[in-house]
Structures are given as structure tokens and as C-alpha cells.
Image (cartoon, rainbow, N blue to C red; front, side):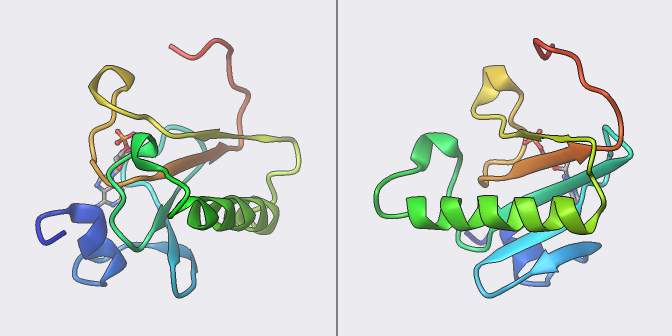
Length: 113
Ligand code: AMP
């Protein structure tokens, strides 16, 4: 999508600090980290949110979770980590391109705020 900031990051039109990249997935550091490690993992193809995951694109989501496990291991998150995908306005989604927050390096409370 031409006006989507994460599509522009995926295309290299907006710079990012990359943690992982392959043909279909990009992981990059969040500009406003909420934990000592805060990486965003996105599909390069535009999917608006978790509400748009379907049989047609769910293999991509499975691949994203493989990437999350790999990046978490490479970044040394051995004590644990949290994966969050905010979906929709009331959940606080601010960028309408599917993304998974990979957060680690501190303890997390439950339930989330
Ligand atoms: P959400 O609010 O769940 O939609 O998450 C969007 C995330 O994208 C926020 O944590 C922002 O800090 C992050 N973000 C927005 N623009 C950029 C950018 N250009 N580079 C890295 N992270 C960004």
C-alpha cells in the first residue's frame, strides 16, 4: 500500500534498524522501545491486522512465528519474551499493517494494561 509506513520500511524507502530479513519477512527495532529488546516483525506484503489473517495468508503468519523464535534466540532472550499484536483501535493499534511486537529483557505483568 503506497501510504503505509511499514510497507515503505519493507521496501527500504524508510530506513530501519534491521534484526532479520528474508524474502517475505522483516524484523526491525521499534523507534519507541517498551522493553530493553523491542523488535517488530512484519510481513513484507500488506496485511492490515490480525483480523485479516485467513487461510490464504496464514502460512506467512506461521513463518513469522518461526522468525520470532529465531530472533529471540539470536538476541539472547533466554529468560522469556512476550509477543504482542495490537489489533484495532481499542487494542491500541497505531500502524495498520500486521506486526508482532517481540519484547524482552525485563519482566512483564499479566494481565496487560
Ligand atoms: P502498534 O501501536 O501496536 O500499532 O505498534 C506500532 C509500533 O510501530 C509502535 O511501537 C511504534 O513505536 C512503531 N513505529 C512507528 N513508526 C516506526 C518506525 N519508522 N520505525 C520503527 N518503529 C516504528
